[in-house]
Image (cartoon, rainbow over all chains, first blue to last red; front, side, top):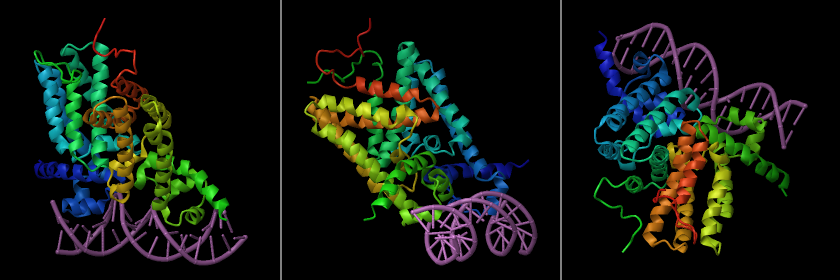
Length: 198
Length: 198
DNA sequence: GTCTATATAGGGATAGAC
DNA sequence: GTCTATCCCTATATAGAC
């Protein structure tokens, strides 16, 4: 049983995630990783023989797992679809620390190390889009409208992270999420305060 | 007169922009730049004594100039504010090649070389947000609603680029832009086909 | 299991030949 | 003005001491 090493590996994932998030793949040098984790390079290679690539893959697997459990599956499984969508917004806001953290998948999507992690990046967004689309349909939205809204919401979230970071103003993230949520149909017996103003 | 060198520099900017866009700051090595521009490192340093930093700054200045002329100033100056906003969407779609190119400012916003270009990144988005907000107000939208919508649109554009790239599907970009445009008030005598269904 | 030392490659940057 | 050669540093990765 390599349980010790496995536990250690698992404990490192969040730290590694933070570093890759902050500096990107190329910007996250082993020295920085060594400094951030408090482990020498030798130890790092014992735990991740594949080097940075393996670290990123481990981080991506962990992120995927988190989203599957906390976001995608609730969207697909919850009896009350609308509640699943609402939960998604709550989880997402928490996950990105209300806009102070950036999306590693988004970072990897933009730069051209992308080709190395393209499938995982794509799968992540495809899974999310499909789960959200299905939930929106179950909310009573038509097929193509649900696809559109799902796309709008995913793009809106990613863009909110970019903008919050660019303007160095985390509050943008919450506001964007709230407006995206307003585009949802009212959950029964509540009207949307979008158009008619006093 | 160093006009020759200046012209050469100017001609290089778009190539450099493409490289930084594709690979990010850290991923754009001088070898890649040398290969992409067809110039040796020596020549590059003659033209940009400050190295990569100066190259990026030159690219950012060029981008800023382009957006000022084609997007921000029209938004601020055109008598018909709504036409200015419409032009923005057209220009943006063209600029990002309908979603096949990514936004360098967005890339720089996400990774932590960011601190080095933070002001320029911030200024770019601030200028855009302010110009758009002003135009939207002139379209008859209330102050705070215009701020909200301006934020939504900027985030939506950036997010659409991320998503298009992540899913490797450029068509996403156009669809997202179109939906953002639908959130604008109707330009007089045309109704929004959003809510009322057949 | 951890770190230090080291191998090897590639990074940015400059000097100098042409 | 351009490239080649070169400097020095940092990067990744490994080997081996403890």
